[in-house]
Image (cartoon, rainbow, N blue to C red; front, side):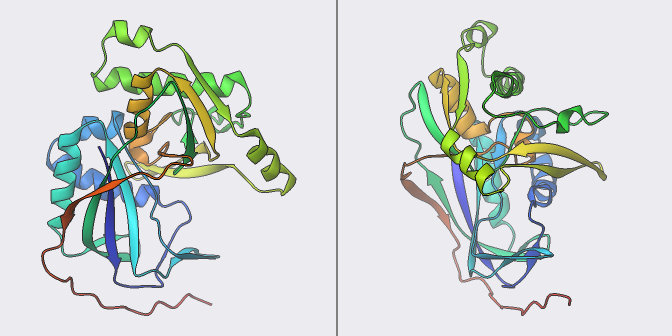
Length: 275
């Protein structure tokens, strides 16, 4: 189940870091632990960054739209429905410096998935869990078999840990190939733009770093694998806000699930950036 949570932004002009998934994760961990679904948060859950009208500043992303959107997704429908109730139990939610009021929830109606589908990265793909040393931060070209193999290994481990697939089923999912959009990658190189960066994560107050990749790609895999990754993310650390994908060249129908029952108190507080 994939949902779009729409929030009113009560303090337009507020700033959050460029990569702010760890701020969303801290809020989610607090909520999801309340209803005992922490295993799903680890294995079969993912979410996007905060989507809205922004301006880049030296302090991060400054948000100017009256509304922002975060996409949450999981193979565990119960978890998502509990999360919806939790969101609407609060008149205001604070993520970093953003003060948000929940407005509505929309469900994305996923299309029929084939063995080959084209995707966009809504959040960076991570290949490895953080470990001692810097091996997990090494750059690996997405055009290599090593990259595809590492994505597969990280994904299949989460599929196994989710408990939703038998050993026999997992053995049948060995056909897996991630093919990046080479035109996009080459254009990024020519324009000296980055499609791979080092991103921070927080674990029990300790800052760690991982390498993530963001680019369009085509994935060849069993339909069951596509069903899992479109709801639970691709690669490692999906529960930390990595590996969420969107469909390329496809308009996803949506269904309204929940709306606020009364207008939220909405006050715009001017934000001034330090000089």
